[in-house]
Length: 538
Image (cartoon, rainbow, N blue to C red; front, top):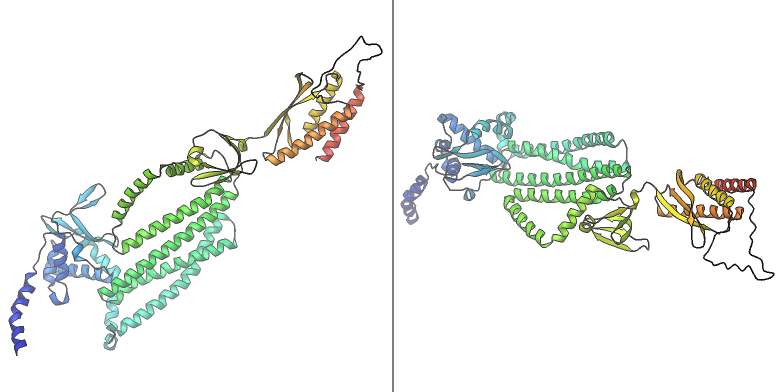
């Protein structure tokens, strides 16, 4: 009896509390709260909820208000009232302009928002115009038809879920699995056709990557199917919220996987392209681009996941920008090296395996990294040159030479007859023409002067191969041919010496070397040496 009296005593207080909530349209918070509060089961007053819609007849306004809530519930969009601004003059900044509006879910449902009209906040005219289309997307035509044909037994509840919902859920998952299998085969076929059009190469490794790429694509199609159908099952807001959060996380993870595999496919195609080019610097760019693009995918995916959990990524980006600026100032050398790397790949002052002279460093370029370039010297030691310095200093790229120039001087004895000098010069010229590794149209072999102890024959020749080892081998064969020619002609090479001539001593005769200057014999000798050289070096 006492409990009953207490209950009767507190009834007026509960009634007053219920009546204290009135229509309030003074700010975004009060407008959205008014709309949602008066459409709850325990406070259902659709006329008051319809007050949040301007310039429509009452019946139409009620219908629109109910559909806005059903769309939000159907997509599992839980409105956190505590986060809605209470400022009557609240403005959302869009681009360079600001508007008196507030969007409930900017990422997932940007079409639904409130705006300030004549000092009060209402659902926008765009929201009212688009709500019918949104409602049909969330609840297609077959939903209402399905409700009519469900028997009474289908509404029997098991664990607070109706029997027809269990059956529909099973059918939805089954259809999603079938769509997954079909889409996987179709997407692999399409990707393979695209790959063949681009590369004209049916590669087994490509097929493996394409199959891995087709897998998440088919999963995305299946998830999109479930995302479209699930609102039709008409579960509660809490269930929808968790289900759609799970689906969105799954979609994000699958998209990350798709982009990972897409990067792998693109890099594989690019690596095949670089293999067909002369430059090996492009080959060095492949792993750098691969790591960079994977990093972009990871960062983009992480920001997307944070957005799904309600974290404001704008604040994170602003903080990361400030932190990045501070980090850049603290590591200027690293940033300079990164800029130097970019300039090297843009200007391409050298390629991999090029022989360069960069300041005091002389050697072969082996690798270009993010921070430095590795150069191997002739003694096989390694130099790591920061890319910032390499981008600034003068680089002599020996690897870009069209030919390797070789210039030397041959010293003949002073007592060599002019006829043999002419024959020797002529023979060296013919050896150059016969040599398979020299440019026969560009060379110089001339008697250029008188040295301290020799008659100087200048030899200027160009070797075709740019590889250092091949050049040395070509020189070796060239030198041996010159020595054979000199031996056959009877020409001696001079060395530093001093000759003392004594004319007055009795029975002393001056040194008189015998040279054979017969033209026919010298011509035959030259032809013999050149012929032998040509046979040895076809």
